[in-house]
Image (cartoon, rainbow, N blue to C red; front, top):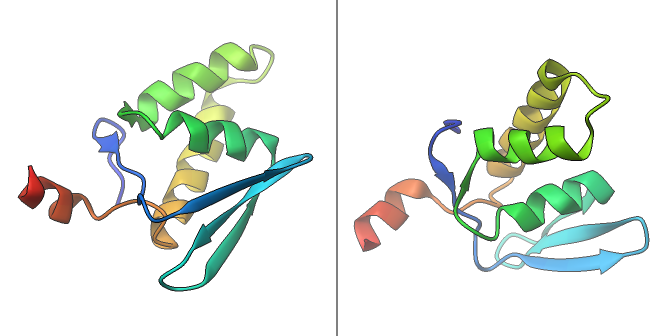
Length: 99
């Protein structure tokens, strides 16, 4: 389960293919494919650097000031959790052992 204060670590094997209006994430080991809309693509790109869920929410709130923070937080956390369940984030335990 994701913790909003731990850095998100993307699985380095994931391939991002941008297309008009969004992108696709492809996980070659499992063959999983996930379509991202424009906002999802922006969130994924934020995850390329060490960043927490809270920092992502802050960034999205700045980008969409007319949307309530509570709604952005709920939607972002759900989206990030789905990506984690699909294996698009690295296993944090494996990463900690490598450090």
